[in-house]
Image 1 (tube, rainbow, N blue to C red):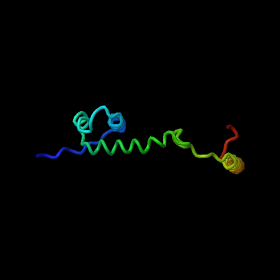
Image 2 (cartoon, rainbow, N blue to C red):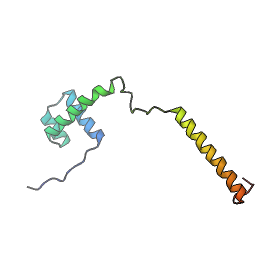
Image 3 (cartoon, rainbow, N blue to C red):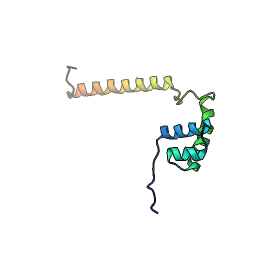
Image 4 (cartoon, rainbow, N blue to C red):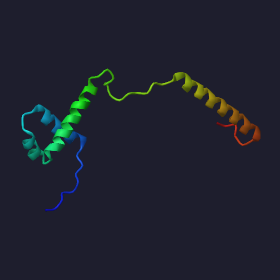
Length: 102
């Protein structure tokens, strides 16, 4: 008896199998035969689906969380970089390394 090589299933395939298990139209054995995977794997994917489904409908389940933007810090950084650019432009112009055409 030879070992089957390890297979990697896509998230879409896992979701399809887990949803079929949640529906309950077929038994685990029938689903395992249909999708050619072990019944224990179907049980694990079904449990993962049921655990994470509550997060979708939770208060912050609107998708990936966007980090809060600190506008004051960004404006301060812009001002700092503008000041540095103006200083370097003046220094290079005095040294003759920066042409007047720009």
